[in-house]
Length: 631
Image (cartoon, rainbow, N blue to C red; front, side, top):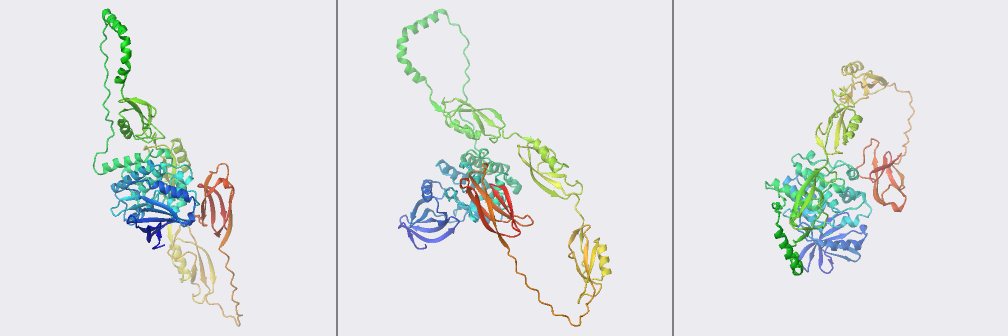
């Protein structure tokens, strides 16, 4: 491939990257005399090739300083290529790994603004990225971020998932609806950008302690942990932006990338000590019309006016159209501002020369605080310039107070939280010298704090008093009387004594002990000793012992056939995974099997070679279906 020429213009210079779906080369374009990056798509992803090239052509129309430009796409000798702008620099992922600590907040917000601007430009041109992650963000020599790999996730979304580091990495950033295989829109990119900001602020991805598959399952049901739990130096405002962007329900995220970008821009101004942008409407207030004092016209005046009107009606009819045209005020269509921050709504209405008036604020489960819930006129309704448009603004979720859970059982705490429209979160356990066993020691949200409904409250349950630990003395080689005394002093009772002959240990001395020396054991633990009988008498003519026959090593693997029959509740496109657990219940790092299936294909049956002694659990869209034991 090196030194070869494509399309009579692109000379391949060297390989600069290799991923799960493509190999990237540095090439020189002889016509335009510049370096370019050429992406050679791998044969194993040979699906929808025409759609992929059409996608690349559409992306080539994008023109934004924070998007890697796509110059060309073509197919040569049955192989597909995409020609792109060459960026000489690391990916954002590589840059983060080189840092000793997370970035400062203003640097995080600055990167977020540029990425949001790039994605907003793409969305306005009908392109959704679908694979926003640090690996797909390049940094120039001036540390300017540039989005790349547009469209690849869309094209390969129908392909089978494999055990591949690149695919597993994408699971960390994908929106819940993307994992479910349902409809995606611009809000899916908003979620992924929120995860990127989370990683910039904390140095790790959400649910980083879990495997990619387990983290994906948790992301379908659990909100991402607040940033300030990991990095208290981050402002609550950035935390709120990320929490909203990563809401499980798309309707609870920002309505558009523009709305998210504007919040980041205002936060950046605050961090830089500037005054945030005010979106107060500049339309002057409507004048108050005060009626003239009632005057009773005299009868003479009345009849004079009536006579003039009757005499001039024909002439007036000629001039009425011109009069109406002169008196008519210009009109403008009413914009639709529901779902926007009210400051943005005021700017939009002001640009349309309309007056925005907030008439009410109320709680909402759909829109966050400060967002427009409703407007008094429908979209595109013709209005006179300066007309009043009344807005209803969200007060956010209706807040509830957290009750005290101290000294309750787990069941009592969960029931009380449900009564307050709250949810029990993680349950930990700790020893406590005062709180009785199985009672709540502490809760993550203090009593009386106001939170939104469905907030998770974590609790810690008492395991009772911590048991006393005893240190096992070393009695091997000691005479039985001395050994007994040492064990009595350590409060470790002797449970039993066996005797054996020994050529090295004198009679009545300890050969072995059941508990390792210096080990800490719970109070009440007992020990077993083996005491020497001295040397065994030598037999006159001992018969030679036959060497033991070596037993064949039993096989360590076996085959298991896994089956699944879709039901009415199964999604049309579902995700089936097999996870391995050892005898202690520990989950293997990578899934044994992970793949998308179509319900229309019917029953699924496949056989895998697995390790003996493990349990293999089948999941469908994150729900446990069945356990298979490998004997």
